[in-house]
Length: 107
Image (cartoon, rainbow, N blue to C red; front, side, top):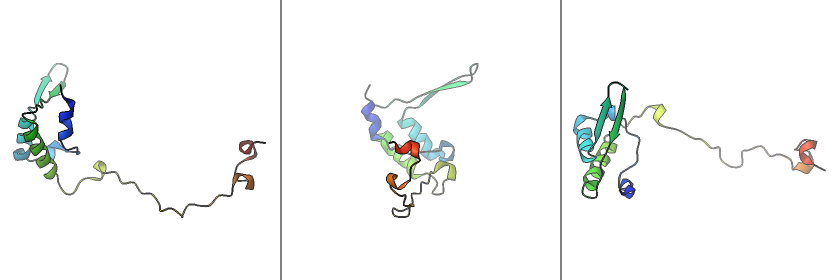
């Protein structure tokens, strides 16, 4: 086992339903994807096999899959964080000026 091979692959959120077959099929083949479905338990076990010999093809296929992502993504897949610029926060007086309640100020 060589988990460092995973570092060769791009990291991105990919909705496989949105990938065209001509992009997803080479990706699955390069990763040697196997899916075993248990009809009674209604569970699927997915496995990929990544080797030193196949990591280059997997990297190319994964990069193509990421590039094939739609340019417009839904809001649920993006997280926007906004931080106000420094200097606009309200100025509080120092603790000795009464900013803290008496029980928090101590003796």
